[in-house]
Image 1: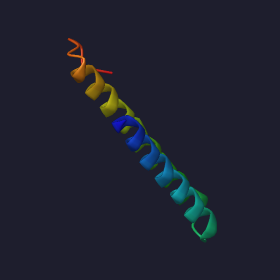
Image 2 (image 1 turned 135 degrees about the horizontal axis):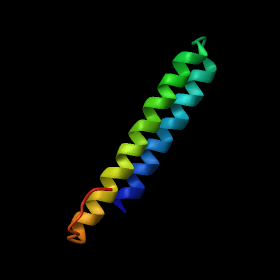
Image 3 (image 1 turned 90 degrees about the horizontal axis):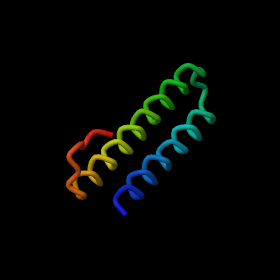
Image 4 (image 1 turned 180 degrees about the vertical axis):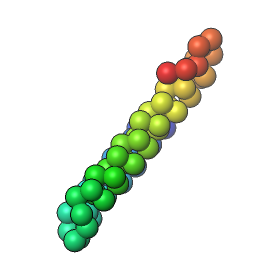
Length: 64
């Protein structure tokens, strides 16, 4: 369940950033950078969750 909580939190943050950037007068470049940061955070959260699952299963290789 922990992975689902992390993913849902990051997806909500992604939609919030996209929504707020669409309403402001910010340049498209700034909005793109924010989306890139959120996407990186989502990728990191998925990798962390994968490593946690492997650790829980006591796998020898814990890299994802």
